[in-house]
Length: 270
Image (cartoon, rainbow, N blue to C red; front, side, top):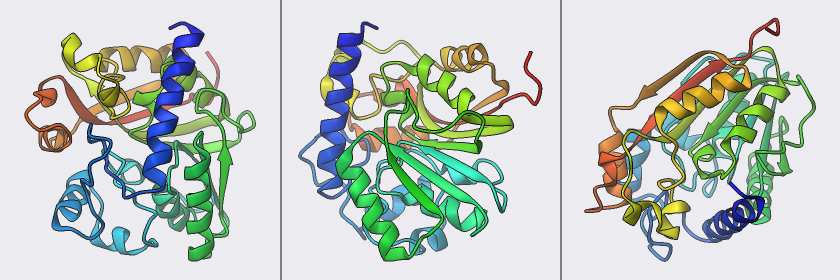
């Protein structure tokens, strides 16, 4: 993709998520003005359960941290260990960062990176309310992470990488910052079939997790080309229900699915 087009798409995504940071979260719904998932509603609770969050996890964070913008629970995909340094790509209001912070403990650290200043401010406010001292929120793009080489044990991300117009760069930079043996645990949307142009061309869908989704085989190839090994992509059983809820009557659930993605940086470079 040309740099000019990539920058335009980033601006679209940044605008959408700036709006989400200052209003109720609407998940991946296409209607930018929709009050689609008001806090505390039965619908919101149902979606959170579908994505794999326990009631205890949902109750453990301050109101406003969970904006309903994900498609899974990356902190539940693989083990987070006490003392781990965890990096969240596209950390939003900080929800998954706070869950990860509890698992790594005071001796660990969770770094959240987001390109939207409004999201960063919200996450820092939430951290202050929670007294979370082992989290660090940084402004940056996930293609160009403000993180040192080989400094991270685990990377997590929740329905964000699909929004990037340069996914190859995302996976390459993720590989760069992981320590040898580091793990990648990602919840994301992937394409399972070729989408009609009528779906892919809508800007609202682009910033709502659909049009930017790469085919599952392409995601695997990009990870392996970046150097990752032991790549696993598990399409989730809840996908159709979740996607159908985002875009009712669009048929989008026939073309995309939510997936848990796992990969490992080898301990010795090939």
